[in-house]
Length: 478
Image (cartoon, rainbow, N blue to C red):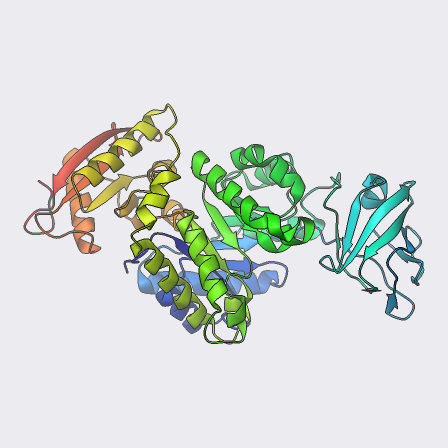
């Protein structure tokens, strides 16, 4: 099944979309990768969802990517005597290590790492920013704050710390258990929450040992300030706009989104734009005009993928949400302004053989108006470099490794096909031409360009380009 767009769609599974028939409908509507939210999924449910996804994969004959999203630390205040209290702007309110129920002067904060790290002047945002506090004094056991805005706080509300770097791991004990379970399943990506610094990735890499690719969710100001270092240690990034919009001024989020997308494009790492993209479609069959514009902006910027959360997981119209997102992306990519915008943001190639080959393949293909770029990739690196160029024509990524094809299903423009490795150069050309014809990217007499490494089956050896005609039988190259 050939997609008529280059940007990918990541759909979250949930109560509205967990049975096998619905998963297939979502795939047919346009979903390329499926997200399992470990905040809500038990290990048993996660395993069952993976089994259903792999059944659908066999039925449709296309590699499907699976992403497991770890919950990360959840910072919350304790409870109140009456469940909630009313506050007044300007009053003093204290968060402390006393586990007795709170009142309108104080509340228990069961996180000693916060009590130790917050300094005077730091902001504390409660309940997604509905209550804003500023620390005036801290002694490691309590934080005396001034209420800046908001009038109410209730039991177990979340705490955000936009000015404070916490000395805690991005992995909780629950995350470690979840990660261990995920690593035993056919899952391709793991998304990490609460990333503050590049060191947060080290522990996960040590545990994963290359068995899954790591996607860092950028949702904290501390991560934005060390973005390039985090990109270097990540396999992909997500612009987690919900939490970013809590911890940073709302008006700064669009600019940060552009910054993250462009940084990832320079590095050749996939980037996903997420949160509230078609939020109204949780309960409505059509999105708002502003939401359509929001999705279109991410596509114009060259994001690898756009994500649906509650829209596909718990909404009333999961299939319609996916198909709407697909139609928006297709229309944007047909827009006459699209090629110019994508070209203007294209990064300069690095001084490597793989980048030089990818650049040359794009230039030759666009100059000669070829039907497709075909790249052989075992590890996925060659496919990533080809996608980094954002060519105007299709990229077919051929891989003998099914795990690689599944992982690359998240990447912009890549049509992934699992195939046996070529036995020699002639077989490589024949196989590329046949698959291009079979997958409806070219007809007999059309030309494609093939990139590969010689000698064959040597990882990281991409060093060859070959232009070939699809033979009259559609089976051989000329």
